[in-house]
Image (cartoon, rainbow, N blue to C red; front, side):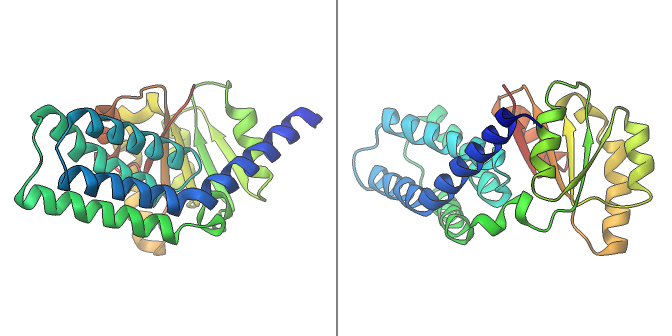
Length: 228
């Protein structure tokens, strides 16, 4: 293996460690910004800035495999986007729900550490359903560097056949296969219940829209990672 990929892997680990180190403080600052916005003059421009920070946190957390943080941030995106459209400070149940979501995000940020990431959560077997070889080498090397075995599949039928035999710890799929996830979710549900095991499902997509990510969550995806 060349030195350059190894250097990139080490650099990525350093970046992730730095992200994890500052995550609790970063989440606390976001919560403080929200509380200040609600208590002071309601300004849509400030809400838009907060929304962008939450959106960035969701994407970065997803890339680093921090599913709980990413999902909490994504839920906040949904509420904040509706407040942006309305242009008014939320009240009643909407305000309470948003405050609860910020509390959940805060707890997720405090509970997350290096041992909580997907790669370091005893993930030994990874399935990758892909349409292109573009990112396969780098992804394979990244997981193998964490003592994981990654199996790649080019068709839904091949992936379904292997899922019926054994469950991975992580199932990654290209976004192009999202419309056919129903062919896999049935097998996953049966096998997960039988083995009392949860499989983290990750979608890698070029789509960056909130609608696409919400659609993936509704279809059973745990996290969506936007690729360049």
